[in-house]
Image (cartoon, rainbow, N blue to C red; front, side, top):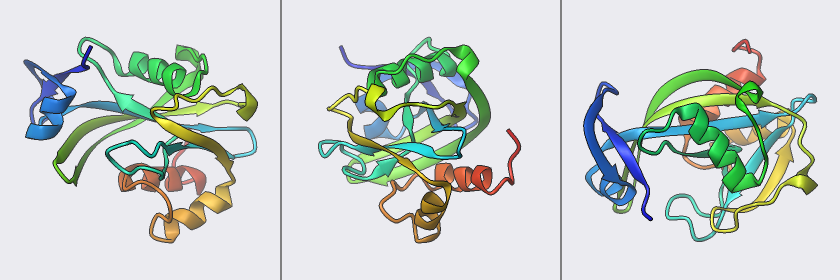
Length: 180
């Protein structure tokens, strides 16, 4: 069954229209997405490497977890679902902290991705051996040190997806510019 999303207008308001993932990306329709960073007690950040079959940014390091918000779903519930699907980890509402909303537009080939994003933080110690990756989405996971990730961001997002807004926000978190 193909995913269906609530279509938003340019102000982020619901239009009452519902469209498939393909329609949203082909027509450049605004829709909702969520993403999160999992950071452990030592300020290590868990990232996922996108699978080689992904249309956007294959084989690149990405946010810990992310995905679309399906029709009728709240962002928090979409995030809990995505963590379970992509990483095989159970989290609940108490594990996540909403940080910020933003917009992003990414155009690659015939995909026009216009998102109203919800960014979350999950402060949790995760044993990588407990992760069961969704092979269609994720090829591997890795814990990056704060310094290692800050170097990648400052080095023109070396090996990272083009989600510059997400990386810039993570940089602010890691440098202590954002309180959480």
